[in-house]
Amino acid sequence: MEFRLVERMILSPCRCFLCQRNDGPAIDTTVQRPAPVGRAYICESCGRDLIRLFGGVTADAVRQSEENVRTMRRELNDAEAEVRRLQPFERAIASARDEHLTPAA
Ligand SMILES: [Zn+2]
Image (tube, rainbow, N blue to C red):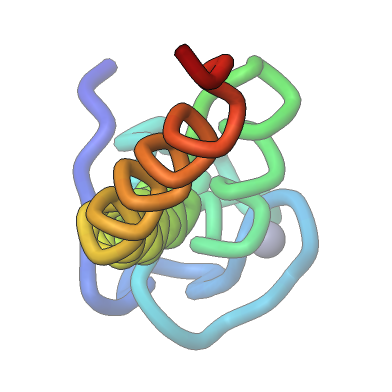
């Protein structure tokens, strides 16, 4: 048995073994049983459910995680730039505080 990704379910009964959906890409399990079972396909939707149940991560989830990482990196870069802009003020405030708190000789 060798699973293959196919664009369409072309062998009878031409539908998902689990949910009976008959459109879109599918996994062809290459399992062939006598009628009425026929070829056992698993549609993309059922395949995603199986992946999740086995603790796997779907390609969509990976893409979403990558986008989240890019967003967080942009936010981190912005925050670091803001820190760099504020550092001169922090030093000026510290300097002014030191001048005012230094006891007069
Ligand atoms: Zn299905």
